[in-house]
Structure formats: C-alpha cells, structure tokens
Length: 169
Image 1 (spheres, rainbow, N blue to C red):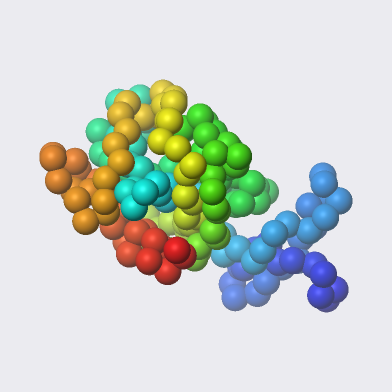
Image 2 (cartoon, rainbow, N blue to C red; image 1 turned 45 degrees about the vertical axis):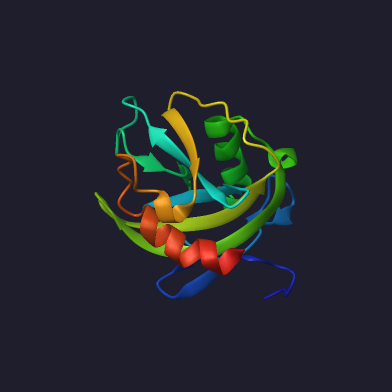
C-alpha cells in the first residue's frame, strides 16, 4: 500500500484504500462507515455552544435542539461535507470560522439504529446565523445550561458533546 494513500473506509475490520478520482487525490482519512453515517459540527463562540431547533419540516426530532448535522453518503469526504452542511443550515462558511478541529468518529444510538458520526468542532468569528428550512430557531448557551428554558435536546447530542467538545478544544 502506498503510504501517501489515505484510507476511506473500514468494513469487517479491514481498511480499503479508495482514491477520490474526481479530484485526482486520496480522500482525507480513514473512516468507519456504516449504513447510517452522518457529520456533526459543534459551533462555539465566546464559551457558548450554538444550538439549532429542528423544524416541523424535518423527518426526525422535530422541535428538538441539536447542532449542525447531515447525512453522509459513502462517497463523501466528511471534512468537505460538514462545511456544506454548515453553509446550508447556518449560512456560515469556512471564512466565518476561527478554527475547525476534526474530532472523533463516534458510534451513537439514535431513534432508528446506530449511527457513525464524524464530529467536528469549530469556533465562529461571529454569531450571525441564517437558518434554512431545517431549523426554526437558534440559541447560544453554555453547554451546562443547554437543557434549560424548556429546550429538549436530540437524544444523542449529550453523548456527542461529552465525547467531542472537551477532547477537541
């Protein structure tokens, strides 16, 4: 195996090298993929976490508070895809971020099974968020107060924060 190749996917305990032929270079890292994969980005600013309330138009967790998330197709690079989701859900882009840290790949239980979640942690330069149809409200809060004020969190958000936020900053 060429040491410059990066690993894309683990299946049955074996890593498979796959090149991103569309761009002519390998994808960014070894990813454990399952039938249910997602990206998640924890946005921070001035010690507070950005929470987004899911709208009535989404398929799951309507009305619950969550971070930026999105389904991850097996062909997509998580680092690139999380920036697409960031733009769609908040109107922010990479230039709005002071930093972007790749966090762990987690296996988390959701309402419909186990998900492989590729986590990223970022600090924004400002708090100007433009929501799309997926969310109907935004709040910035210290994590210790995330569940206050009637905010009902998506079930796996606490595990995602516990495993990622403290370890990536």
